[in-house]
Amino acid sequence: MKHSWLRSSMFAAAVALAAVATVRAADPPRMPDGKPDFSGIYTQPATVNATGPRGNLIFNADKMAPLKPGAESLLYEARNGDPRHDEPRAMCLPAGFPDGMLYILPIQIVQNAKTIVIIPELQRAARIIPTDGRPHREGLEPTYYGDSVGRWEGDTLVIDSVNFKRWILDDYHYTDPTKTRWHSDALHTTERLKRDGDKLLYQITIDDPKIFTKPFSQDFVLTLRTDWEQLGLLEYVCEENNRCAGGHCRAPDAK
Amino acid sequence: MTRSLLAMIMLTAVTVPSFAHHSETAEFNPDTPVKITGTIVRVEWLNPHVWFYVDVKDDKSNVTTWGFEGAPPGNLMRRGITKDVLKIGSVVNVTGVRARDGSNNASSRSVTFADGRNVFTSATEPAK
Image 1 (cartoon, chains in turn brown, cyan):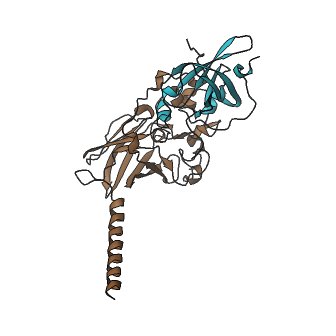
Image 2: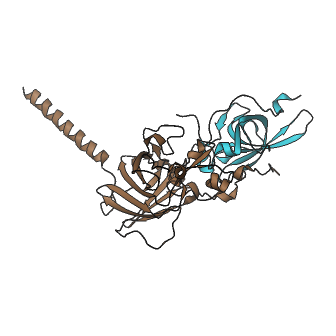
């Protein structure tokens, strides 16, 4: 009888400890101000439940919101033979956002109490995002990466971006030799980032009222790679050795 | 004829996509696979893509230099493929797809060394 009570007590204690351990495992590391610490180097984003070719790194067309009447030509543009239009990044032009976030190279996040900096290794185009409550800047010309401000909703970082110039939306053109996919200058994005262990849950909401009837979201996941910390992000100067720009290769010169 | 040193344009399909900073199909033609054997003579471990050059001798000892594009250096290094892997002087068999402009350039897929070692030099390997 006594042993039975003891066994029950030990079992209950073990369950309680396991529950505490589970909670602690899910609880993210924190900054001195108590906010979750997102600092680190992560793998490229990968779409959750991707569909379609290269679906893990582009927006899945079947998950997009319906198009506005006549907006098909705003979303898709035929290639016109000019590589600066057809594949700007192949000419070392900016990837922009969100395209620059969705690539095969890692992403580093640097954080302090007032700022989050997201640095894709691709083109090393750092997005410096204030989290101190300031509003969007006004009076700026539209840009490739837009103007971003962040705020915390509990343990979720929410990044709001506006003021984009019309540019390629993603790498859709990798999957279609005839067309490219674009966003308009009315693009407004909302990113939601939350840590779950060594995963960074990352959602982008695309609100582009010149093209879509309503906003739509796509979920991605990034994986923290502490084993990449020592190597760190590498330099990425596209112009250094872009030998086949626009489909015109320099002759091999091994001398 | 020294077949092992003969450049061959193979008619077999090469279907592994290479996710470069540009669309593969705009600069390289997946319908013109290349498979050559030769000697590595130069390596450019630079962005946006690694390039390496392979001298190929034909049966009359004429030498043709082929240039091969690889993945970005960071992508290869995080997969454990460093510049030291592509040693100058190594005899290699390289597969890839040829440049659309008809030059002796190609986007590489894999490099096989004389001892049988093989590395994927494109940006993506078969899914794990």
